[in-house]
Image (cartoon, rainbow, N blue to C red; front, side, top):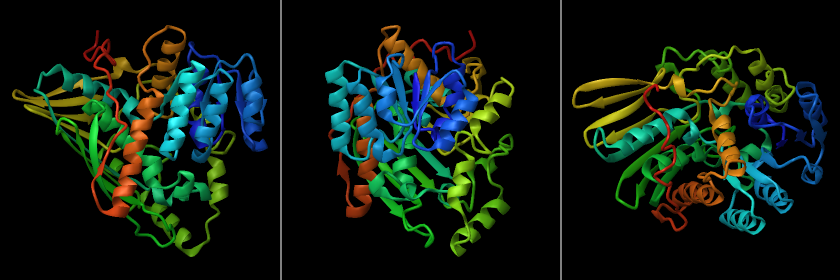
Length: 412
């Protein structure tokens, strides 16, 4: 397998890819020579390329992970599929429905698997929530609510990350986490979206807030919200979350002042988090002990699932299920794999799915069609905000009931 694009997203995925026995990391590619150098230092046995074409021409590469800037996702995925490579593409899958349509067509025409991955729907917490909701032990699913408070808008950003025309902005880059998750929990078939965005920081001339009401075909309601301005961090509500990579309140205040004054060198800051940078997650993962990791909000926020006779919420080591007999703790540590995964299990989950589909002949679930349906709802949030009306969806697909059917929720 090869990694195409060696930025911050790749840095959070490469440790899992390199450590999983099912995967052989054979190549990496990027235009930036510093990132290529960093990749070569971490993975001396892998080949290093400067172009997508060179990766696609390598006969040893069977599959690629597309982690290039969002505006290139469709172009690079289609190029790889035409070369007969299987593909995992980062969220968002594409930036227009026309691009997504072409990706679906390329997957079918070339007989390869394309998975739209790396969203928080892949975490064991959300997948276990779905299995419990489907089990009916606290009645049928009735509502889903997700809310996030982060510092997304004041983190270091490149110009393309702040340009919606290039797939930038908080809705494009964070909306897929929440929408993919609620689609998984609710079965996939959304009917409509009514959204609104907020642009509240002059130094960032794009929305840093979004909220939406989404309704499934069966009438189940869902809400999402993300406030990325950094005045409050959702992680502060959970005493076990002490991630040294996260900004403190003082850090966020200083970053906001520097941003508004124009003193920040965001390009330099961004380089620190990429492959080979001073805060490279690959290096951090290689030093970390292999031990269970507790739940934290990340950029998704806590997910609240309301059922007919109870509620399901995340807890430190699993889930709390509130039912007629009171709360019950469900420990999920036995579902975590030992490989390092700075993404919180997302990389491992989608890599397992690709391996199962390509090598084991198993069903693929996060297909090109699934990714296109999530993108449709993400785009609908922005369209609804601009036009101030409800948007009806047309390209939704179901998540089959047998997804994760063999997941053992209680330790086995």
